[in-house]
Amino acid sequence: MSMTQNAERAILAQTRRGLRTLLAVPAARAGGLAKVEEINIPGPDGRLRARYYEAESAVAAPLLVYFHGGGFVCCDIDTHDSICSWLAKSSQGRVLSVGYRLAPETPFPGQLDDVRAACAWAFQNAQSLGASPDRLALAGDSAGAYLAATASLEINRVTPGAIALQVLLYPLVHVQDSLWAHEELRNFRFLGRVACLYIARSLGAEALPSLLDVDLSAAPPTIVAGGGPMDPVRADVKAFVEALRKAGVDVKEKKYPVLMHGGLNFTAYSKTAVNALKEVGELVRSELAR
Picture 1 (cartoon, rainbow, N blue to C red):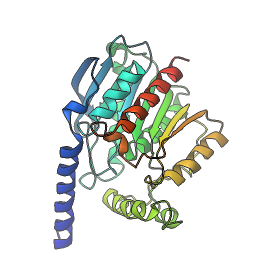
Picture 2 (picture 1 turned 90 degrees about the vertical axis):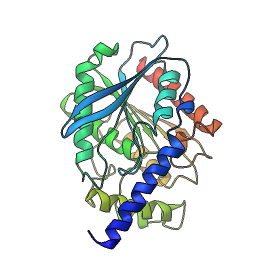
Picture 3 (picture 1 turned 180 degrees about the vertical axis):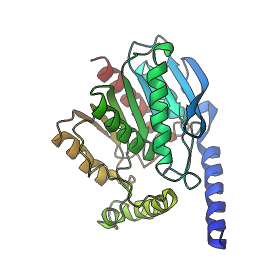
Picture 4 (picture 1 turned 135 degrees about the vertical axis):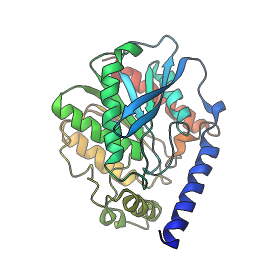
């Protein structure tokens, strides 16, 4: 390993530790939950950490399976504990947060393989958790939203309607540099471009399929929540929403002008994050009650 690679690995390790310190705040978890349980899920290369959240008086509805963001290289179920707890509480439902192997240690599509395994487990075990046995909802933020959207398409192409809803929080739509270079100096695109160059190299996946280039007709009803000028993916999210609607998908969109990318993690510090998750959760409850 070269000195440059050693330096990059050291920076990544420091970044991961810093994010855990900042975001894995037990006090930020929503109160009033009936159950929070640690679960190990069998994955393609060992066990996957998962955490199950159940609201008090949880309504009968599909289990919401959540995949965390972090650019495929950072974060875990602990850094996203507060998001999932607030979604469970505000939706009056059940949320299963699942970790996946990170890059660069695991190149793409290892992350997607883990998501597929998690979805299979969720279908097999949803009824034992008190959720609907034949349908799931998938959710995630940023890179996790990419994984959720990709899995939703794959599953619904085989079994239409099996994924009843997808909830995408400031989704990462692609890592293609040619698209990020467009309007690079506007809407904080220069920050996103640098991040996506690193993500693509870490994944070993410069050809990671863009969600703008795939057939979206099998996508389930969709809730999209995004930020304002501090969210570099917002131009892509707009294009993605338009593509979903053009494919005939029902899309409910929530926009939060002061929300930065990743801002929903900051429930310990931000009323905006808490209020946004409450609104999204209430919308999830409404959509799954149909």
